[in-house]
Length: 482
Image (spheres, rainbow, N blue to C red):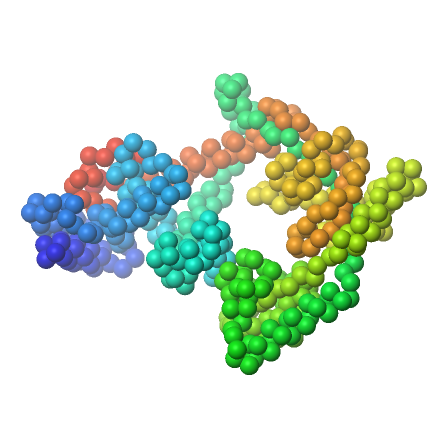
């Protein structure tokens, strides 16, 4: 143990000395820093010769700029890769440290360029990851037992990891933001590739929808409100906590796992009725009045405010729609579909006067799909809501469906009919019909070239030191070994 601690001590002292020689925030190969590096490397190597590698619990194996890479960092990435089915090739002992080193390059440049990630995005991303783990484990308790950590410890550990991932992604986007390809570039690329390398475009559809919300009986609304009032009374009396009741009863399943906590959000990300009440809360000990939103009925508790963002807990309850009301809505839409077939009015006219779907009512019922490239009316089948996809799958263009029940994007039960506006069957991409698809292929390849060139150049101007055992690795990028 004393020998291992000595190795770590030498490595840390060397890292501090090298940092001091280079100057704060500089990543240049000064001759003095090289001299310091030589002395440090010799000292570490002398210590390493006297102790087997497998007896060292942790050590600094690389230094990139002013950032160390620990042996434990490599092992953590290896274990995560195994858990997620990620392959690091035939030589992970070389591949993983290099990948970590490349990440350090992007993070350093992000710091220089003042790239930032909003705290609300970090919190949301961490919560989503923890929720995925909870679903896989079966419960919060099983997850904590499996990982031997509390949820709060997991959240704290993931915070910086997720922030760094987002910083790296934003830095890459900044590096390639000016990369463009012309139509001539696209044509030239696909003119010279083998037939079996041409991308396949999956079937795409455009769908119009007319949806109505079955009425909820007043007795059900009263039941929901009484339950929320009971929750408020129990919290105010000290019988239990808001977070406990949220975990047990809230129908916002994602936030329920976090005790109802939503994370820091701006007003624009929240339902207007919800935001109006939440942003007026001032006392974290008090519970809000009952709030009705597009999602259901809530009570809210303030956690913290930071500038124009708020972090709060909430409990959501959704009134249940009776089978009788669903049947009545189906019967109504069945009659409407008959009138459309009989040309009493068009589908578009029915949408304008009858539909309750705010997202499509003013767009002739046409559903919109949010993609990385923006909004479009085209959907791949897997991108449609599952209930809609099952109905559309067997329809012909221009055909009207029978009424069916589904859950909308607000989590509410609705009854809908859909009309298939267009269908483009799956096919190999062609310049005339799928230029954007083919352009994206070429653009992504050009972006990848730009990223690789940036990394290669960044390595040339960045201080790098590694343990001798890595110097014979067959790295993806040249120049690591100085």
